[in-house]
Length: 136
Image (cartoon, rainbow, N blue to C red):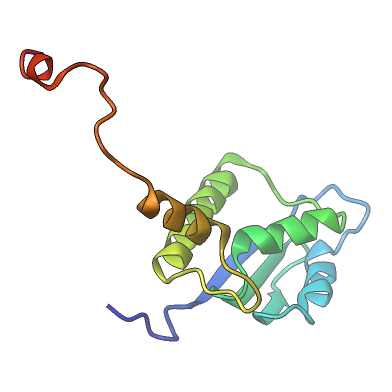
């Protein structure tokens, strides 16, 4: 089940709030994302709508949004957008983990915990004697 390169490139929409000191947040975000590794394209479609294409194994939507909010931009938090983002965050994180979460520099934190979990002793930790376990 190999993933093709096309499956690892994601195209997402980021919507910003309208009431903000910067009236053109999408263009500001596009300029901020221009030099980020893994971002293929960031094009503003309106003053509050940004379309982003990125490589999933280098950067995720959650990381992009965290970076934009830390730079002072305000992402729209209406219910529909929150639900979409939560779904994207979950599926992207699952996809990255299933692909081994390869990163250029270090091992993924989840991979470290998975290795530890596999090395643990998973015997039944019931303190009752074996003959008592059959009756319950």
